[in-house]
Image 1: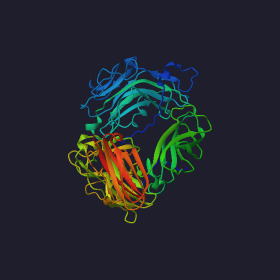
Image 2: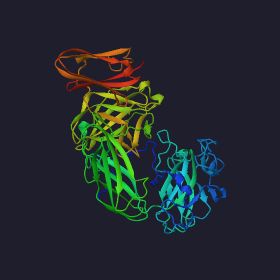
Image 3: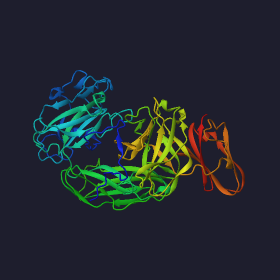
Image 4: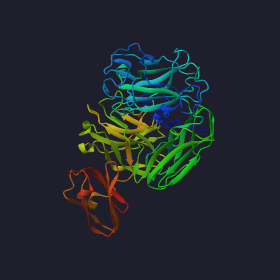
Amino acid sequence: MRKVYLLSLSVFAAGVLNAQTTNTSEQVKQELNTNPESFQSRPQQLGADRAPDDIIWQDQFEVSADWVAGGAQADANNNWSIGSTVNGWAFGTTGNMGTTGDFARLTVENPSTITMGPLTLEYQGTIPDLTGIPAPHLEWEQYGARFITKQEIQVSTDNGNTWITAGSNADIAPLTSGGGSAYGQPETRRFNITNAIAGDPSNVMIRLFWDGDQNGPDMNYIDYGWFVDNVRIVEGHGYDSDVQEAYFRSGVNVSYEFGLEYYQVPTSQITAIDFAAETINQGGFTHTGVYLQADVDNGGNVFSGTSATVDIAPSASDSVGTTTQFTPSGTGTYDITWEFFGDNADTYSANDQLTDQFQVTDYTYARDNGVQTGSIGNVTSNTGSPMLIGNAMDIFADGVIGALDIKITDDATNAGQLIYGQVVKYDAGLDQWVYQDQTADYEIQNSDLNGFIRVVFNNPVQVFAGDLIIVLAGHYGGSDEVRFGYAQTTDEQTVLGYTAGSADPFSLIEPGAMMVRADMRDFTSISEEATNFAIGQNVPNPFGANSIITYSLEEAANVSVKFVDAAGKEVKAINQGTQTAGSYTINLDAKDFAEGVYFYTFTIGEKQVTKRMVVTK
């Protein structure tokens, strides 16, 4: 069966730079228990006739002697302890983690005086015999945050000679200047440990484990704090299809073997979409006849596709795609739901579905989902120097790119600096990327911070069906580099860029989709002389009480004006209808616009021009 969750780039092999991202060695998928309090009243006796999710064993850190801390460099400021309040430099010493009673506390000071790990907290009591337990799951509640470190719970079945990671926070983005956040207060983690204890399920030991991860001791051996409570092993379900990842991809086998995800698609680039997802059987029995169903809603269901069926053994995974594609029919928001079904009912419902959405727009073409998760100002070994970075994108129909929309952060140091946009295109005959065009420089204003800036090409970039391009945001370096926003995690070798003097693009490790969007329309097709704009480009304050747009027509044409804010959301539209040759005026009311940056698109017949304005009051 065709696998759908691996990605390969068929046109070039790029070098790799690490832009302060994390590359962990453990990627353990979790299930989320949405009602952890419900476990407190369930039977705990090993001999009881348990149901799925009933507790086999648990510890709430009520007896501190049941846990022993270890670590070669542990001391008073770098160690595990047990208490009823949080501790450490990041969370203080007076709060709690949202549970009752005592809990385990991992503290590593900042700056750290240790240069090696690990730091462990090992349970000294007896774990019941787990032989024959259907799909035992490990759960715990936690608070705190992770830097570039390992936070794991490990198990041993050979009296502590070998420890295996049973559950990990490696799938949670670290909290750095580029993104991430603290954990819930608390949040619950859930992992299937069937494989981890397969050596001898009758002789299970357990410990909490912390260590550095990568990038050297200057970064490894500090952390914000990790607080753990209510560690438990529960009985799993017989049939439990846990959706791990899901995709909607366009351009399968075009430039990238499995296509790319586009969260905003202009009408000129509408094409067929493939849906796929990966599931793991977290249950205790082989799940037969498993298939994926993908549904798309746009004011009602507009697509429902299914995959071929597979049989999935306990703890095994598989990835499948729908046998049919979906092609959107018009502008709007399309909501997607992925879910797996099989011959037997899935009795654990907290991990059954994944959802997402994309938009079909008039002109915007974007790979980011609009939710900024971090930012990037440069890459390793290029600090202070110019850099370009952006997204690879397939072109499915002939068109033009008239502008790029670039998201910058709210860093005050961005103001006053210059940015620009650029487009490069892959030439298969030359086996290299070829420069197409660059916008004029734009100086960032205070009102631009934490928003999108539109940079316009003097002449639109021509693109053709089958092209592979990169849309790039650039800055000129300096002591305070401009920071560009990025969004959801995306595929490696699809976020690409250039440093000063580089001929070939680099690609980022574990990248986020850059918030650099192509605006696929011609911004120059109405000459400045054709209209007299009372609101001009970059006018600092177009409004008194009211302002006007005046224009003249040499022949009859349909005239309209649409205003959008800096995020691309429409705030006002004016349709003048078809007008004969002559001079006309459009009145604008100041109360229709809040302070901020806007773009207005003036349309005369088939021609358009877009202007930028800043509203201050």
